[in-house]
Amino acid sequence: MYVGRSLDELEGVAPEDWSDKELAFFHHGMSQLTAYLNEQGNAKHNLIIKEIEERGGLHQEATWTQGTEVHFD
Image 1 (cartoon, rainbow, N blue to C red):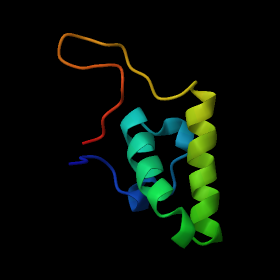
Image 2 (tube, rainbow, N blue to C red):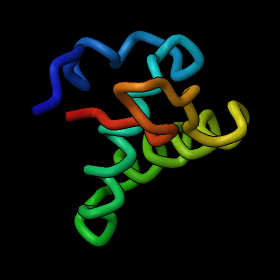
Image 3 (spheres, rainbow, N blue to C red):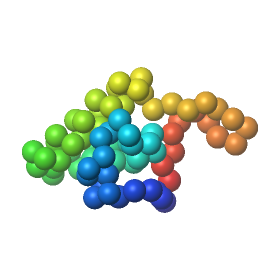
Image 4 (cartoon, helix red, strand yellow):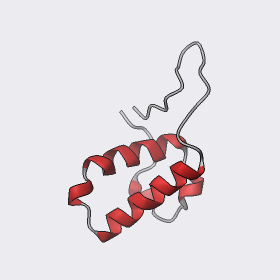
């Protein structure tokens, strides 16, 4: 289960200031709803994708308790 800021809370925050988990969570959700998003939703999703690409993807260093994939739940 995602525990973090809602999209309403992130509305005034630039995607550069979002955490990797926030980017991963909202990218995943919007990807599944692409056919139903309006222009504003598509624009927001494109900003999220651009930020993920600028960060070089969503990766984290592997440890004994977690892998390299960012899990938002």
